[in-house]
Length: 331
Image 1 (cartoon, one colour):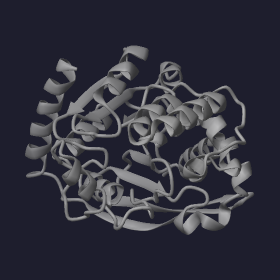
Image 2 (cartoon, one colour):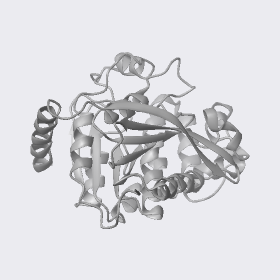
Image 3 (tube, rainbow, N blue to C red):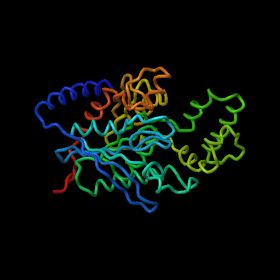
């Protein structure tokens, strides 16, 4: 980690100096579509102008109804974290593609019946985006960036479709059932806590649960249990260990959802990975102290800027990627 931080400082200095002598890039957003058997998945491709043969980053958003911009309809307002990240990277000459996952926002019509949705559905869609970007022949590198649950989805897709690099941002290392147990138990009565633990244990072992307490019905409703079973069977650290491409782990130390220990566990699983623990960055990529009220407010506050160390960390990693072994961009 120390070597990466030192390299990051040098890269930041280089970027600052280069800004004085190189053209200033603008981000040009345009619609992008992935046609699938289940329907069209809609996204936004942000390209730097002037256009160069540079890298492109595929963003994969987190769990639940989180859209391409990093916003959840369960919250009172947007935070625009991924939208802001796309704009910031474009200013450095780095293109990006972000999309509404199947069944969410503009991709709502591509949703299968809830009982047929699986984590692998999302991974296959992300892999299809990678292949589509590769066929376009416009990019020197295709980098996958998965945020939160999107980290696991991105690991599976990056390996499946042969991405050039992978970045995990606020990605857990442990199975999701274990993390949910720790997150939910403190707010439950003893009786509900026992039921919750039993349900999670059953789902983690591939068994559905029928006797649901009404208070837990929304989380574990019968139609969503197949998806949870498909999700819980994965150990992200194990999948991360299987990746042979350049890897970066980014974790904020004021994240109240994913602790820095998860980033350390990912690094232990694949010591080739670079690790950047960013001071003050929370789960939605903003600079927020570890105060519960301010943390929760930040999830629906688009006026808050991105954590200042985030974009330099990503840019330093991407710009240091080795030259591609094949012709990168079509004429």
